[in-house]
Amino acid sequence: MNLPSSRLTTREKVSYSLGDTASNIFFHAVNVFIFYFYTDVFMLHPAAAGSLLLVTRLWDAISDPLMGSLSDRTRSRFGVYRPYLLWMAVPAGLAGYLAFANPALGESCKLIYAYVTYILLMTAYTAINVPYSALMGVMSASPEERTSLSTFRFVGAFSGQLLVSLAFLPLVRLLGGGDEGKGFPHTMAILAFLAILFFLLTFAGTRERVKPPKTRSSLANDARLLFKNRPWVIMALAALLTLSSAAIRWTVTPHYYKYYAGADASPYWWFLDRTSFVMTTGTLAFILGVFFTGHLSRRFGKRNSLMALTILNGLSICSFFFIPRDAYLTMVIVNLITNLLAGPTPALVWAIYTDVADFGEWKFGHRMTGLAFSAAMFAQKLGISLGGSLCGWTLALFGFVADQAPSEATLNGLRIIFSLIPGLLAVATGIILLGYKLSHQQMQTVVRELAERREREAEDHA
Image 1 (cartoon, rainbow, N blue to C red):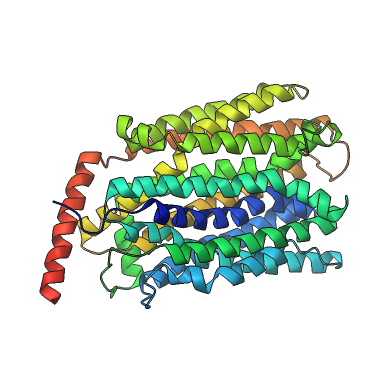
Image 2: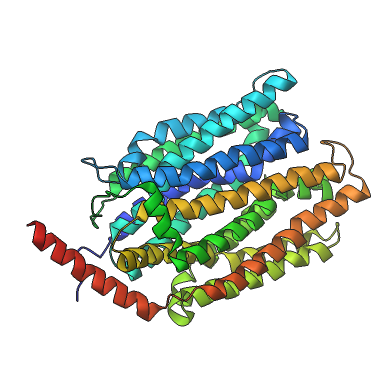
């Protein structure tokens, strides 16, 4: 049967993708540069910074299911999930700026300021990003359209990542006149303004079409049903390991290239230092990989494609352990391969999440799109918390001191943190995905029967 209002225009897909461009301006800036900012600019001890990341991100992870449940219950003239793009755009931008504002404070006050502003940023980010993610599940009822929308979304996401990789450090140097303490807040002010603009464009250019039933059950009952959804449980475990792996790489990337590869002492590539160059080219390879999502999904299925790519990506990350300090070109090439393999995976993951939400509604007769997405984001952010904190604690264990020549033990620690730990976590993720059994054929049945069920409910209420 034909699904009503399933087709989406390219314009609407592009509008939706801008929301993830905005989200990744914050997400990538924070995950790659906040730890470096804390240790090398704000001058916090690495162990204190690691503990800060754990505590604040744990709150961030806990707030996700709460926000998902709240958004599921929201009813406004703008829709269920879409209005949060309007309501939270400015607060998110302001919080992003404050996190990098670098005020002149004493050591203890700096730590308090870092905790407060980071929690504010993560709370504002959750309040806009959870409904934004769930919005994809109600823009169309078609799994094929949602896979296409997911591909657009992650082109937007990695466009935001590319913007940060390409411009962040050069803008810090340019706007700060060589003073990172001045350059960081000026740079974040510009990026936060762009993020606000993109969120508002997403709000203006998208529509909700799948009308979720009114939610009457409690959050506890919703959570019980969610954990009975085996495909969701598998994906949540995979998300925990995947984001632990990614967070470790993101967090330690500036330190790895500055202290291990000697990025600061290297010649510039046009206006990019070597850290920015490897991040920018890696992001371009990531974006290129996104365009293979549809082909891989159709040819091998979403689960099989995700599983194979994740394992190959993990092995590629592990290979960094064997690259010598002076083999920068090899680092660039391996990084390109790693990111090309990883490119299709986020779009596949989020397309699978929409399937999992539909499967839960079909099996239990209760739709929890916002909670399913937000609880998956809880697992992701828990992984980010653990991965980011591990970097701080491990660097302190290996004797890292900001802006001092690293010892051999510190260099070995950087190699292990940057390669073996995240690589093995990625391989483990691929193995866990063997437990995901929801096939394309089964999803076709789920979608058809859900459409019939919704039509009957609409007729009953007519």
